[in-house]
Length: 136
View 1 (cartoon, helix red, strand yellow):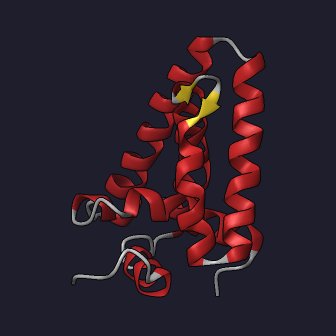
View 2 (view 1 turned 90 degrees about the vertical axis):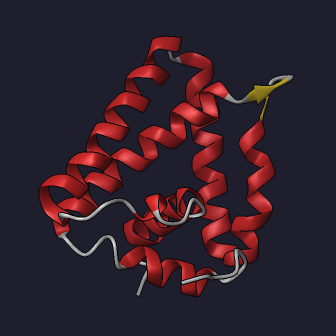
View 3 (view 1 turned 135 degrees about the vertical axis):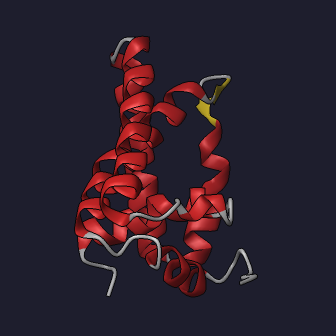
């Protein structure tokens, strides 16, 4: 299914098809934030996190999700300033272990991003919605 990058409702519905098992969703609720932290820690350009360039897309999808993801990115950036560099590596590895465990052990299905790379960006918004009750 080809979906526009600006159609969050369709992207989210497609993403949800790959995340039906509760164990997989729990793994993602832990793993995705760890991966986002690592990416925020690694992608600073002149001290500014490059991931900030993605924030307009999240706000385009949904203003509340944009605000949530932005707040989390800010928290990650602040944490990266005080945590040792190895913490980002540990978060990244553990985050991906959780992702693949969720899909392999509980979901029994490949990750959504294997079919559509935009799901790498959908994941943080979808988890933010899941954790805050914004996802219906």
